Image 1 (cartoon, rainbow, N blue to C red):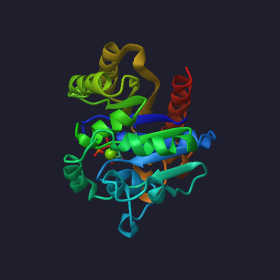
Image 2: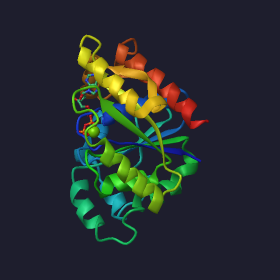
Image 3: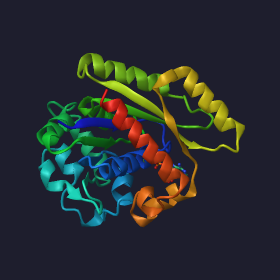
Length: 255
Ligand code: ATP
Ligand code: MG
């Protein structure tokens, strides 16, 4: 049975997609069978893995509307054990249609249940909003990972996110748990990063992963080459940090 992890934070640009892609890559490298679900209409995870969205005949957009089978849209990546369910920008319109559908909160959960035996991990990359898509991600998930950028306002909106999580847990998904909080884009040259990390640790205590992802240009460059940083420059600080982080995720999900 796959462990389903939704990477979420309604704040934009905090490293959700980067974390989804690189976590998936390192879990797959550790011989887990991984499916990455791109649930963000921006489709950054899809393009960051070299998927040409213009050639897709079906994607998560159709899957969410029940117009395509999940198995039909899942495709291999260039990496062993690592598959992706890509999306298109039309997923944004589909979300409006989804709002009128029966069982609109459990659409993703139902399709993931259908393939859960074929994977060890399903990683969901979610959009920067607390929208119906994100709620679908939370309802489908066993765990949430919250990436926070170590910048000013890092914790802004976090209370609201935790509230949404609590609501989902109570109403639809009692098993949902916060797996941990990941500090991203950490810049050790600035005292701000250290101050924000201290604040995040004060708030989340041992929920904060030991691994911290540094601000690293190789991490930012990798998507334009259609690969995770571990494949782009495995000796970079960013790759090393994501590898350590993936190990922690393995540990925490096997407890
Ligand atoms: P959105 O909310 O728009 O979906 P996101 O939370 O998914 O954004 P990313 O797309 O992963 O965030 O990252 C935002 C930007 O920061 C991207 O350009 C990405 O390449 C860059 N970035 C992410 N992590 C790092 C890092 N550790 N070092 C340097 N740049 C990074
Ligand atoms: Mg993103």
